Image (tube, rainbow, N blue to C red; front, side, top):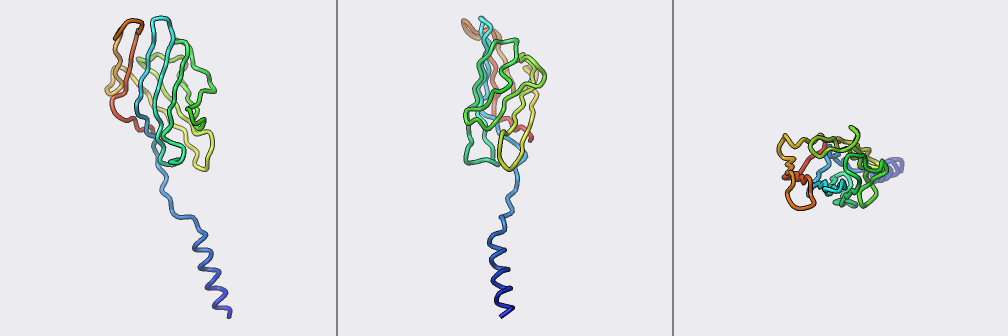
Length: 146
């Protein structure tokens, strides 16, 4: 009888144990672009895909602000799960640091990526069309370490 109860308890605890899930150490950023207009407005768009949170990503991230100043510190992606920050201060699309931080969830994440128009694949073009002072695009997918 003792053997049967112990066997049942052991089998039950094995079923209840969480599976070994491997944590991803990167967030993927795609469709990454930024525009500074001639009237000093700025916009940035990118899509975040996070293997640690497949149920709420991919999600769009969009920002609008006055170029040369900092966007709101409370800026978040459209699903509200990622803070968007620029830790080096006001954004100059030619050289800036993008930071993302997961707002909630069991796996804490915070990562940064430094982008420079002098380094491929962040590519910036001055005066590409009327009304646009600077337009930048990331060619490919940026893997941000978290």
